[in-house]
Amino acid sequence: MKFRHTIHVFIDNFAVTYKQLLYRLVIALIAIGLYAAILTPFVNAFTGSPDFVSLTEGIKSFLKNLVEGKPTELGPITEQIKSAFQALLRLISDNRGDIAWGIAGVVTVHVVERFFAGLGNYATAAVINDRMALRADSPFMVTLIRNFKQASLYNLIYVPLSLAYDYLCFTLLYFFVFRLLAMLPFVFLVVEIFLYITFVVITIAFKMVFTTDWLPALIRGKATQKKAFLYTFDRRRKNTFNVLSNFIVLIILVFAINVAAIVFTFGVAALLTIPSSYVILLCFEFVNYYDREELKYFIDKKTIIKPEKEHVPTREEFFKGE
Image (cartoon, rainbow, N blue to C red; front, side, top):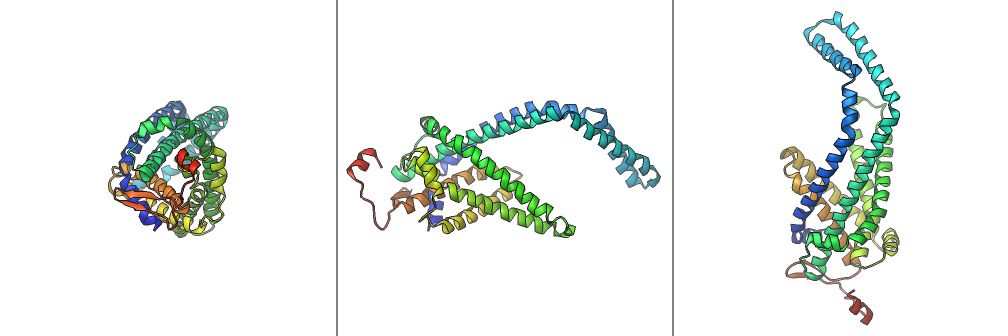
């Protein structure tokens, strides 16, 4: 039932996908410019070094002589490649400090990019909530500006936690799957990739389960940041397994649709499927929250979902707009 209602709410809010697309494109273009400004000097210094030129020329000569069947020429070329590669490693070692600063710059840009993307997700969530609760067609940018303070506080907490969780889990999974199983024959590489992607889907689903009520509690529940934070991680009486299974299905569908969009349309369809992925996941979070809190909501213009036992607001709740 939740899944079906989520699809209806997503269709009802599909217009916000285009606003997400434009917002994320602007952020992506700015981020790409900053990445280029940080990485270009390093790449130019690296590729312009004599050792790198020697390495690339050695590799080209090796392949050429291998194709032409000149085995006697391969020995000296192999030594040239080894020597150039070792020289490049020394070059990298001698410039560890500059490389560390470059990595720090890239990570900083990535964190800031995620922060501003999170502001867009918050505005999208607020637009979805307004439509579900009141059938209001809230403007995206106006909603973003109106909720800027609350959205900023939310993302200052959420983004570092999310990034730390992602980096830790994905790194541990990489070493667990590809390092511990490295003794397996090469033919088992497909099995390793399957295991890695499966575990990645599960870890993402777990993260979303424990953060699924955060935005709805802030936006619909009008909770403080502290209360919303404690509320989302408290899984008592929240049917966690059902929520987890729904998230796993949604993540697999999102992954499959985005991969298909990239492969079969050369990335064109991904312009819609990627922002749509964020929107449909937010729709599920709010459907799940509304259903559990027994709140009525619109899934389209003519259909209202009502709980079996509708909550009658108190006088205080009525005047607060709850």
